[in-house]
Amino acid sequence: MKNMNRVLAVLLCVLLTALPLGAMAGSRAADISSVMSSFTLNNYSCNSAPQQQVNGAYRTVELLEIWAHEVGASGSDISSVMSSFTLNNYSCNSAPQQLVNGTYRTVEMLELIALKVGCSSSEVSSVMSSFTLNNYSCESAPQQAVNGSYRTVELLKLIALQLGCSSSEVSSVMSSFTLNNYSCNSAPQQLVNGTYRTVEMLELIARQVGCSASDVSGVMSSFTLNNYSCESAPQQAVNGTYRTVEMLELIVRQLDR
Image 1 (cartoon, one colour):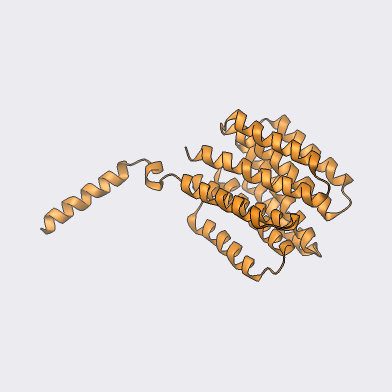
Image 2 (cartoon, rainbow, N blue to C red):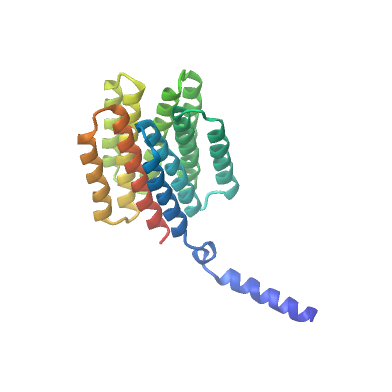
């Protein structure tokens, strides 16, 4: 009987080794759908733009968690970010503080993704150093949210270039990022700049990884149309964070195929 058990154990090991990694990990389609369901349900319960911004920021973190798993980032590193995400949410007592939690965890998750896809460790470290230094100089939650949003754009730039996105298109987004920052005269306006450039950078990445052109165009059309109907910076920030979620959904579904 013992010999039979040993034989079965060996056979099981051989079978598991022969399975492709995707088969062992399984599809994350259910996880993606769960995030998007939360996105829709939470939007119905939001009664202000700041609450909608939090909804977008929180779903962004959850979709980035899936992306990080898809590219093979360390499970313990991912869990560490998500633990911070949960713990910080418990200590938040306002939407602005929750937004900081969302944007800061976004940066930390993108750091894991950037390193895993092969971005220069020195360039990633430079962004993370700016992230830390700017946090020290922030005097309010809105300024911290801008810090998170701006570092998000910078990390996405590294990821986009590493994935082979057109350098001229990436440079165009970054030029808009810089120029719009000069014309911003408040943290809410800077947050719009950060969220809008995030959407544009994710558009480049989505096309590069093979997402449906019509799906990507659909998100970008909503982005443009909703911008026309926005009457304030907070509403524009919602437009940016919501389109970020939609673009990330396309990306992670494509990576999950």
